[in-house]
Amino acid sequence: MKAIQLHATGGPEVLTLAELPIPAPGPGQVLIRTEAIGVNFIEIYFRKGVYKAALPLVPGTEASGIVEALGPGVTGFTVGDLVASTAVQGSYAEYALAPAVQLVKVPDGVAPEQAAAAMLQGMTAHYLAHSTFPLKKGDTALVHAGAGGVGLLLTQMAVRMGARVITTVGSAAKAELSREAGASDVIFYDEQDFDVEVKRLTGGRGVDVVYDSVGKTTFDRSLNCLRPRGLMALFGASSGAVPLFDLIQLNGKGSLYVTRPTLAHYISTREELEWRSGEVMRWVAAGELKLRTEHIYPLEQAAQAQIDMEARRTTGKILLEA
Image (cartoon, helix red, strand yellow):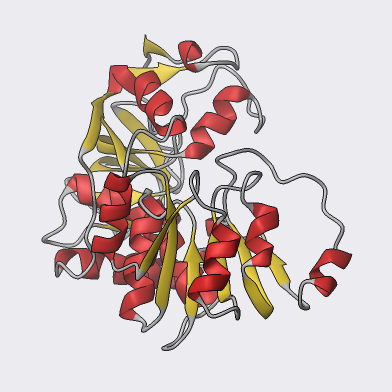
């Protein structure tokens, strides 16, 4: 099979196309013939060595595809099922293994590309809006990277829950996409002091919650956007890791809360995985949750896909096709 492999950490050039044997499923595993592969910042972190992994490595964890074979002890799936997961081992490949406990069937009406685009980012948006800070009617949220994959989905979910959403973006085109998703106000982060603008837009009160996937360049000013006892959900670090932080600042800024959530802890049980993925897929199938999947690259262009993601040249979900 064709696969993307890296033998050393570094720039995009370390991602090389290789011919590897098709893996065999072990106990509790399912072999998938990948149809669509999700590209996420976590693969960039592994490529750079920010996150450690044994080398050589086939990157990737998110994919949709067709069940090709079942390992011993697997039930609930049959060969030919269209499935998706955020726990596919080495998804940048034509075939990959996934643990059955982290695999879900894709319902009718949802295409493979939609399934791959909806899993990680859709369930991330779901846990942020429904669990990390459960939004309710009348709440106001600030969503950074409002035209990104999570940003667009999170905005739609927040609006359907009755919340007001303010977003930050980097261009007029991205601002239009964010408004289409339901943002009431859009701030250009490279032209405006977003914390000042947020306070103006909220009459000096501040927002109830900040959903921040950017990290280093937004963290400090994001705290300034919160109302007293508001919550900052830092769920990514596309601009780099947040520097060491003195917690006493949370007192002075209004007894604030900060959390650093990750999806794995919000789908740690089968019940929670099926709840989140089921709601997201159902909304996609019904047309109630709009996905953007216009950035699809062939597998051999994985390096370019990561370059474009890191440079913020894309909107919505970036996918590879095997």
